[in-house]
Structure formats: structure tokens, C-alpha cells
Image 1 (tube, helix red, strand yellow):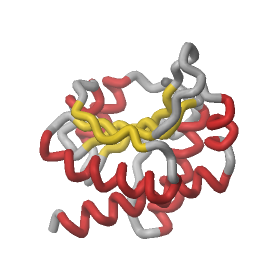
Image 2 (tube, rainbow, N blue to C red):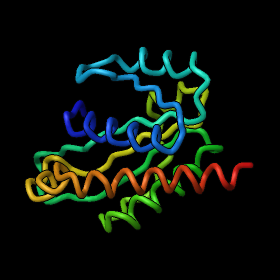
Image 3 (cartoon, helix red, strand yellow):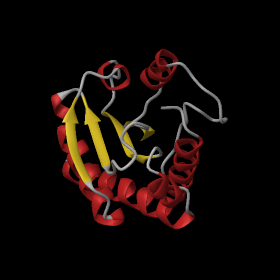
Image 4 (cartoon, rainbow, N blue to C red):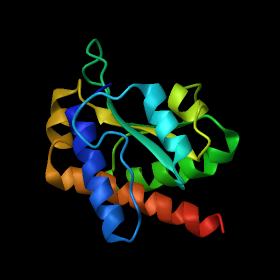
Length: 156
């Protein structure tokens, strides 16, 4: 789901990774919709180490649902998904919806290690309020960064 919260998270993550020395490329440098095909094409033409697609879930008919879930498509990305999911849950203490192999366009079509992260439910009013706080955003970003660190440390 297109979300201003995901845009804010992506920018917070980009800032943190840049401070740590990474070169970060955003498929959405402005708060505007970019078609999925364009996102994947951009990623595939760049010399990126990882592609992360950040999202917030919404299921209005189930307003009490909560949690974080990480999706991957290619089996070689399962470890990446596991590390990132584990670290996000450790930092946020959110409900762990696990890692899921799913046939999603952005993860299937990417030539790079790729994940789609569902970082919470904006259809849950209580959780949406939490998701929009700086403190919680920092916890999400710390979890993602720590998961990436673990992945790169173990993939050498």
C-alpha cells in the first residue's frame, strides 16, 4: 500500500545507512507513486547490494490485526529475510508474522537480493499512532540495519 509512513521510514533508513557509509539509492526520492516496473528496472540497472521495498499493511475489515512480516521470492534471499525480520522484531517487540516466500513482482523480478517488508498495520488505529512516532521509526530502522549487518557479515 502506498503510504506516507513508508516514505518517511525509507528516508530515515537512507539517512542511517548513509551515516554508516553506504551509498543509498531511493526509487522514490520524492513522496510520489512510482510504478512497480520502474522500481525494479531502476534497481536492476544499479550496482546495488540489496533491494528493500518498504510498506505498511492495511486491512480495514480487521482493525485489530498487528505485526511485521518479511517477504522474499528467490530461495537465496531466505537468509536475508530471516536476519532482517529477526532484528526488526528484536528492536520493536512487534508481533512476529514471520518470513514468507511469496510471488510478489518487486521481489520476483529483482536481480538483486530483495525483500518486501510489511512494517505494521496502518488500519490498526493504535498501531498507526505508534508507527508515526520518531522513536518507533528509529526502532524499525535499527532493526533493518542490524539485519543487513548480520546478512553481510555472514555472506562473505
